[in-house]
Image (cartoon, rainbow, N blue to C red; front, side):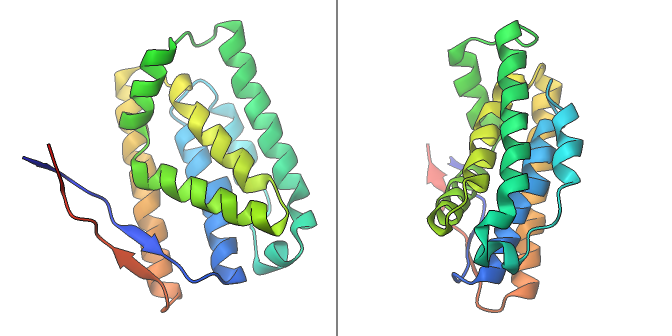
Length: 179
């Protein structure tokens, strides 16, 4: 028996590609993931951030407002978890992360976070941290399934955008994993 696999995108290291990926992480997939949980109020604030362009990548100080808003989002999530608005034990939170957020999305978030950190901004790293906290905010199995579907759709939309806008991008479909 094999499991389904998701394609992985390889993008050339250009400012435009980095901006598109960082924008997707901060203003698209993270708010989409947050919509399914107790911290959904933060998703609207992230979506209203200015779009990230190649100018942001060239001058990472322009990402300060993004980093500040992401810090506020993380603080809100952690505050909710601390006050018991969502009580989840560590084992369930870890299991949920594997089922709610697909590995290619988590891998893309980590890769984008590292690339943007290398240019001098913590914005994408903060978004990645918030993305990792999302599963602990999901309150039901129905919300988990809905979140997984929306996040997967967002990832596929990103792949499509890259495929159509950057002819140097390549999409790799990994072989199925046997269980």
